[in-house]
Amino acid sequence: QARDADLVLTMSEAHARRVAELGGEQKVFTLADYAGNPDGRRDVRDPMGGDVAGYRDTAIILDALLERAVRRIRAERRR
Image (cartoon, rainbow, N blue to C red):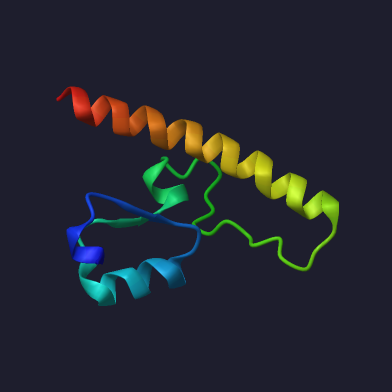
C-alpha cells in the first residue's frame, strides 16, 4: 500500500501522480526531483523497445540519480 511506504520514487510524473492517487501523496517523488533534479528533467525516459545505446544512456542517468538519492536518504536519516 502506498500510504504505508516511507518513500516512493518513480521514474515519471505520471507514475508519481498514480501513487499519490493511491494514498502516497506525501511520500512520492520522481527520482529526479528527489535527487535534486541536476539536469532539469523530471522524468527518466523508459528505454523499452529502444536500442542498446538507449538502455546505456538510461543506466547512466539512473546511476547518477540513485547516487544522489542515496546521499539524501542517508543525510535525512542522520537528522
